[in-house]
Image 1 (cartoon, one colour):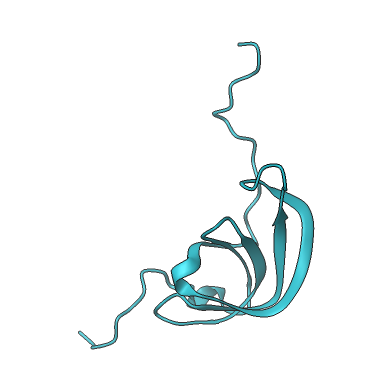
Image 2: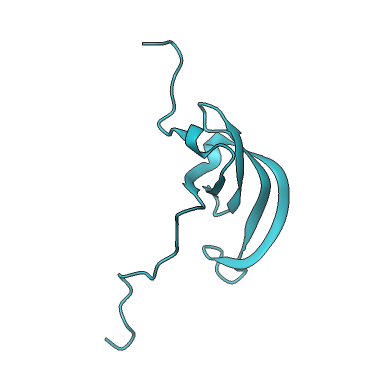
Length: 99
């Protein structure tokens, strides 16, 4: 066993590919993963932040802002997912109104 601590996630397969990152506090960014370390600090290029709804801060809107090259601190990263091969589906647990 090596003295180097390995991360739970294997992000090597996502380097130079598009990823979507959710951060603590509700922020959500998307960009090209350029690098990472064992603490899950991420370097994203061509990053875009999805702005939140002013009425409901838990929801994101279609509005975005360009951030460029950014570093996401590992302590703030909650979720990392690839942008290719993922599609949004309808929530199957929402009850129809009036039922």
